[in-house]
Amino acid sequence: MNNLSNTSSDYVCNLPPKTSQFTERTILFDKEYIIARQSSYRSLGTSDHSIIENTIEAKRVRYYPRWSFVLMIVFLLLLIAIFLFNNKIFSTNLSNTTAQESSAVTETDLPPVDSLISKEEILTYITTYVPLENGMIFSDSSSEIISDAKIQELQTKYDVKIYAILIRMGVNEIYARYGYVFTVSPWNTYYSQQNWYKPNPQSNIDFSSFNETEVLNLKKLLQEEELMKQ
Image 1 (cartoon, one colour):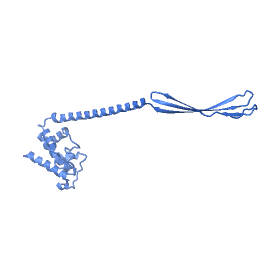
Image 2 (cartoon, helix red, strand yellow):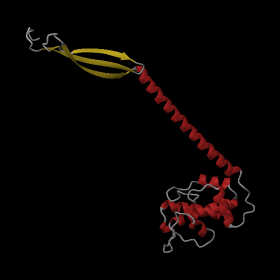
Image 3 (cartoon, one colour):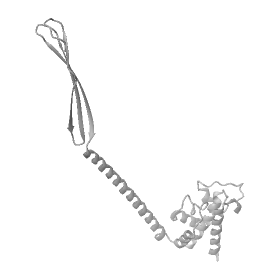
Image 4 (cartoon, one colour):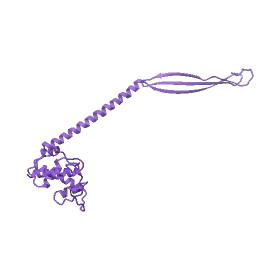
């Protein structure tokens, strides 16, 4: 501090910074306040010795999450996980129920086939009541061997007239993938309606055109047709 005098000269008194710190607790956070104050005094040297005080204050707040807040977040995440898990189970059960209902309709509620005579009528019946994938009964016959169980399932589930056309479809599907041009009804009309079928009149398709899997599948399906003729 400067020496005081009775003259009218000014003097300055600077106090060192004073820092106070305290914590306020809430449900979710602990708030820590750090407040720093600094004051300066100047005498105007007037007859009434008036004093001017200037205070500089800086306040900083820090937030610290409390355990209750952390537990609440964990609880919310747990609820979300349970909801998503239950929703997945519900969707799976719904899909299974729908598939079972569809299967039940296919297996037990199929309309009679006695009135079906022409191949066109049988093919229309198949496209209406038999589950197909992209218009094919064996959609993966170019890459996977058709199992005996699959053939047995078709033979058990459907009437012999329907089964015979399904086997012929399996044969035609392999040829159709290579652009074979069908000239016999109803196959020419049926495959021309499939978006994956690209007819190629210039192609000369025979067994040498197919891969090993397709050859094995063709032999199996053609053999099955021969057995039905006996």
